[in-house]
Length: 130
Image 1 (cartoon, rainbow, N blue to C red):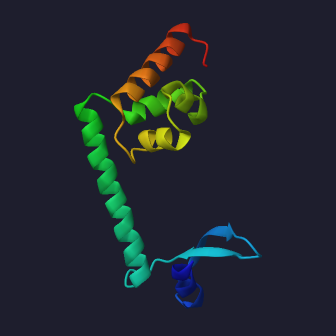
Image 2 (tube, helix red, strand yellow; image 1 turned 90 degrees about the horizontal axis):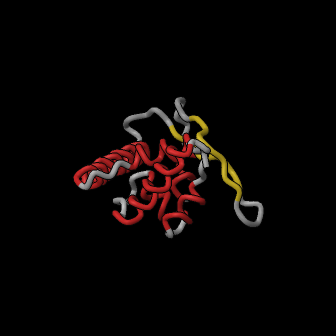
């Protein structure tokens, strides 16, 4: 929250609230953003966003080389009304790890991908939606 303290005191007219937080011992407040391109904090946030996008694109490339498409699995899972928790159990990995695969923060493990694809294909063939 140290970064947020700088935003609280800032008088930037384009400043706006983007979220709220509740912490222990009555620690709570707002998270801010602004449209000031010369703001050093804004530049840091935008750089971090672009780095995350580049990392995601790299992971998409790795998955694509192996014929694995996280977007396709995510769409099939949602259409079948299956939760990420259930898919993580099917794939035998933690929910956090499965989420990282599906949101392309981590390259898909080929075994996990095969299990997920087989399960979702089976559901689509049966047409029972989970």
